[in-house]
Picture 1 (cartoon, rainbow, N blue to C red):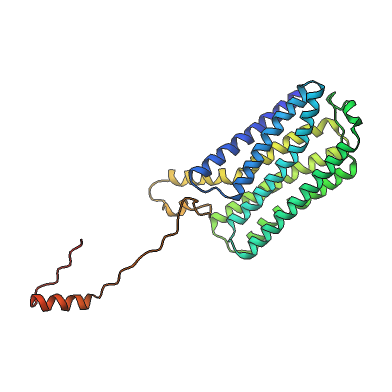
Picture 2 (picture 1 turned 90 degrees about the vertical axis):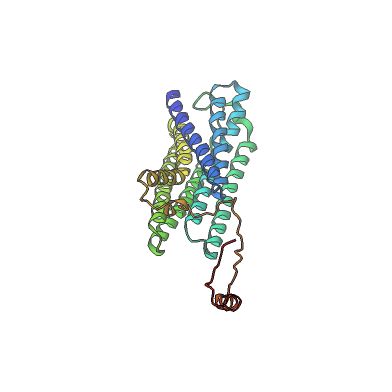
Amino acid sequence: MVTIRVVGSVLQSIGILLSLFRLWFRLQIQRLWWEDAWAFIACICSITVLASEWVYLKGDWGVSVVGFWVYSMSFNSVVWAVRMSILYSVARIAHPTQYMRRMVTALSVLFTLMFLAFTAMKLWWFIHDLSWLKRTGFYTRPSPGLPRSMYIYELCTDCLSDAILIFLPVRLLWRVNLPEKQRRMIIAIFFSSIIVTMVSIFRAVSQIMDLLSLVGVATDIQTAFATITCNLLVIATLVYRLSRRLSGPDVPESDSEDDDYTRPFGTRITTQVLTTIDFHTLYCSQAGNQQGAPLNLSHQ
């Protein structure tokens, strides 16, 4: 079982490395946005999950308890931060209308409330009865577990939030006439949401059916796949840019420079000052002075 956890840790490490590369790439092209802020939060929480997991498994009893607390709180933070990042990715690619902004704001508030509600329930369950600190779980470590009702609530919130993230790309594909590049990005978000949903359901079913040998593995897989799919869109954008550049000089650069639909944060909007010249008046003036000499306009 430890070998499987090692594989899960390797997958989590891949997700963390992709997150760091994604943030570096977005910083280099000066396109950091809200989705990148949530990806950064997911990356930090994923690192915390990875470290606290092995503290929980390999530490002594007291240290293991601390590792469990940190692991339990950080895991849900990773998943919900990834969902927020995907949500803002949809808002970035779609046309930034006032309706879209309001809808994304409302959904982000809904996601935050569902996350805080479940976190509060977990804290109450862990604190109201501390007898679990003296009991051993599946890994001969303290593990209180959660009641089935809380697992069902978590499954419902997971399915609801993931269904929203799946419905939004589908709606944009069918209701809005998007350019080809945007359609490809929306499809990438669609498949990312499906992957996160499938892993969430697998973990939730393992918890509801008390399959303790699968819960830890499913948690590792969900964390890894969430962080990987969170960065799928940006990585796909980078691959698209590179493929365009390698296609040759005949490919127009303007088609690939602004392919993520955000304004560089280092740019400023400047006002152009235009000068109007009355050439007829200028010609008549010079003609009168030079008695028919040809007009000679020199650039200063």
